Length: 98
Image (cartoon, rainbow, N blue to C red):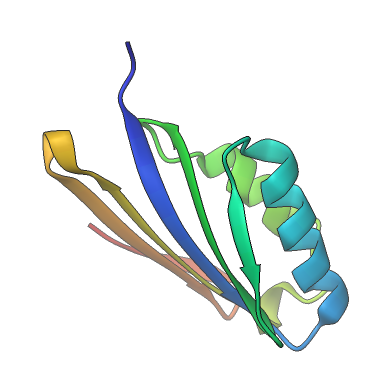
């Protein structure tokens, strides 16, 4: 059985269309996705098999109108193996802090 990691995802943007795209995309691609919609942002929690779903998240980013104006942070943890990763997307680029 594969290990599953938990993802705590936050996104913030003033572009309502992009925020809706992120919300819809996460709900469509992660079956256990819980989204809490905020005024200009959203908090989300979901799980995925051990590896960070980089291709899936990058595809979501490619759909956005204002890639340089969205702020995203993703905290990943899989406690059984003591794995933690923190990623921040701002100004159109990812900064990965492991």
